Length: 415
Ligand code: HAM
Image (tube, rainbow, N blue to C red; front, side, top):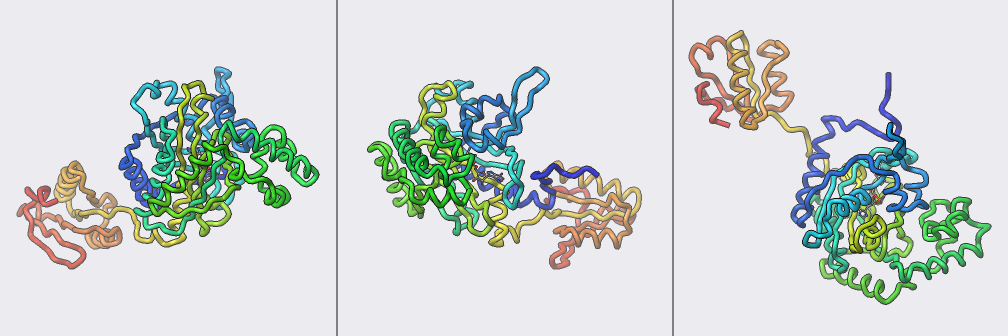
């Protein structure tokens, strides 16, 4: 017996309706905000992620599925979606399209992480990337889009946490301040963070080690050290959210685990699904297009973790009423001619897009009706020698047993 790889799982046909329900609402919302879908390859050049996401991040240092192909190229299964979309934006000349360029995706992501509830090695992100606008209104629209999705799903108990992590003008000075602070407490931080001190002190703020965590409590806060432009931008983001009535909490410790962010960062946190509570996260990344070889292009986006969204929705009973589609019609048939007629009618109706079931198990008439009831067919049609001879049959509505004699030659038009 070969099992599914650790950290991955099958999405069974019985689970798929919940996925379709959620993803359809997400896609519809993205489209209502003017985003068009992109598909990028599952694997990309490894350098795209080391350069784009940052080689001091956990994602790049520890979590990538990297392999060499038969041509000796280093390739990596995408550990996030943004870098690939940015590569495509540059490679396909989207910088010369009218801006903003608004792109969405729905894609599997791969990270070699320790498996736990809500944390998998293969998972799905639905996300957006908005290119070309440096306006705080773009940040607000992108955040509002998540709220629109929640409102349409009936979700009201997820908290939005926002922060600004500054830009290439103010962050170096803040990083130096952080470095001094942690350097004077070097004996108290973990070995990984000692390595981060010189390379990327901001990463110490999301270290899960309790000693690093409690030391970080008293470190200088980025929000107190933003340059005037970043401070003003952050005020505009907050004012924009206030104007839409979107509630948020400012948390100066939200720094995100990926290096490309600048200015606004945000996370949507569920408290009902355990320690892996971030169901959606993102932010502004004004330098990434340039880092990956394109023209200077401000950008902002987010990605939503679909498995975590489903865990959250399940925890609040929002999936209870979602079930697999039920057949509109079950055609019970007995006898060679009746079976052929059942298949003819089913074929014609299915061609019209109507969900029809017939008996392919050679069951008795009684067992066929029992099965039709079990699978929740809305109507049944009974075909035997008599019906074939007269060309008429009983079409029965299962909910109330109401039956109607129907002409077999016109039954397809009834649905
Ligand atoms: P991220 O925070 O690394 O951001 O991931 C986004 C979301 O993916 C998380 O909030 C979470 O819901 C889900 N997620 C992350 N890791 C796992 C995992 N191991 N198992 C299950 N779900 C997971 C990004 O990936 C950025 N590219 C988002 C972004 C887009 N920023 C700007 N544009």
